[in-house]
Length: 124
Image (tube, rainbow, N blue to C red; front, side, top):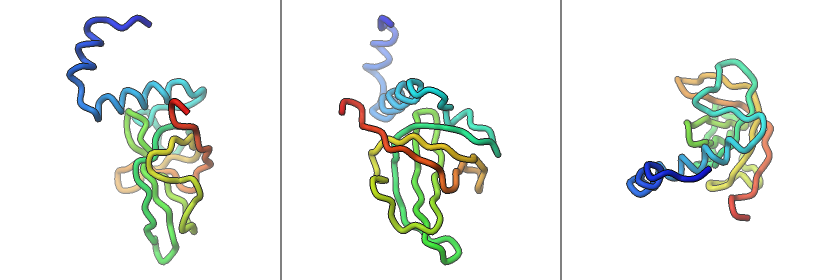
């Protein structure tokens, strides 16, 4: 697709965060079968891709838990692995493809114990 003058103007005036969001939406659209976070239905299985923005070890009811925020350019979904203290390769800045049951926890989209595949960073 040929960029238009409007696209060039918008890119020149966009913030770094807006540019990152555009890049994530483009990358997510390339993955077959993936849905945008903003379109995830509650209580349905979904496959999404994006960048891991934060990784936190946070116990829940005395159980060690790894909590990750995944951003795809359209929104954020929390990924929660119960009974884990660390997961090799799960770190901020990595791209991942995840699949699991989406549910609402305190108004946030969340997937517990998702299947995941770490992806190469763009340009690698």
